[in-house]
Amino acid sequence: LNTGGRHCQLFGIPGTAVVQVTNLSSAVSSEQMRTLFGFLGDIEELRLYPPDNGPLSFSSKVCYIKYRDPSSVGVAQHLTNTVFVDRALIVVPCAEGDDAANGVVLCCTPFQHCENDRALLPPPSPTEKRPCLISYGS
Image 1 (cartoon, rainbow, N blue to C red):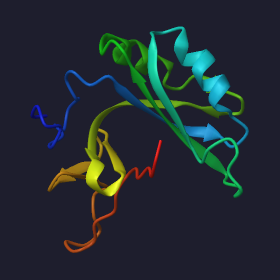
Image 2 (image 1 turned 135 degrees about the vertical axis):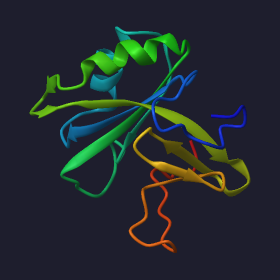
Image 3 (image 1 turned 60 degrees about the vertical axis):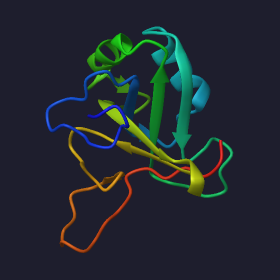
Image 4 (image 1 turned 45 degrees about the vertical axis):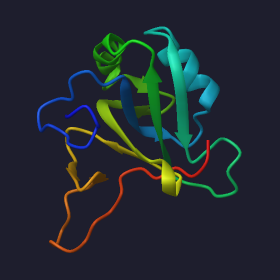
């Protein structure tokens, strides 16, 4: 990871203050996530997708949590496999990147490929590129 947040490393993301929490029940709210992960460190920002007030229904959700202190990321990872509501949580560190000019925020975990200032899932073909998180607005 360089200082611009442009490249991910395959085995961990040193210095990151962000975790990605996946395998969340569709019933989970931002408030519940803030309560659970707030015990592990001071949360600077929390984003739940799809949002609590979203018009569409999904079978699962994903949450991105940014701590004020990067050391909280290691502690938060210990919640992996903790059953919350009806699913076992998956918590991984996540490197931030953003494209402020286009209103896009991207995130890359150690299990994803980052290229050309974008966080990408491993592409099935050399030409396909898919952002792992896109957020418009705040």
